[in-house]
Image (tube, rainbow, N blue to C red; front, side, top):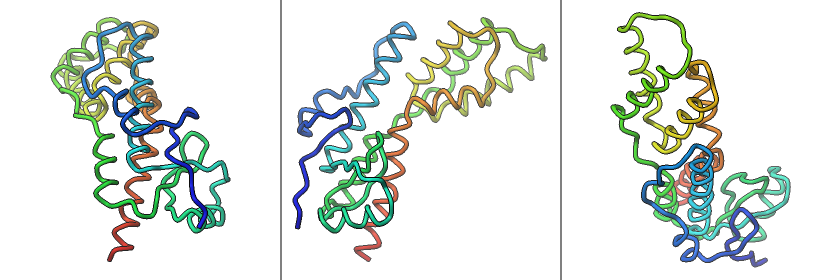
Length: 208
């Protein structure tokens, strides 16, 4: 059996789970200008992905993610395919447990944002942008729908996107525009979360 390297995190560095965990803050990010807040959020996203990968002892491969390549790597390294991330295929040891996968997935989940606070932020954006005229009742209904949809995203990321719109844009954003910008802030975490779900199912089936 071919041995595999120790945990290697995105960015090219090799760190222990303890070292990586110490870099990851679970508290709220500080109030900052949009540009500063974006950097903080991007750093936090990287650290959370690193921490989850390291907790599973994951390692990357530069091989193209074809079915044959993946099966060869799994066989030669005694590992299991996890996901495609940062242009690399990531694997975990075959000995990883369902509980470990569940814990890694749970660490990637955010608490939902406060809907009432989101409505206030959306109303402030409404006042600072150009938009079509509508009755107050229709506007309030629209803001409520926006707030409910935004509540599934991390609060700091929503605050960033709304602040960037207020700072740079003239017109009220469509929901599709907000969704696209928010999704772009957590692409790696979303890919890893999806991979963990598949891996959990694979482990369940193997133990059935």
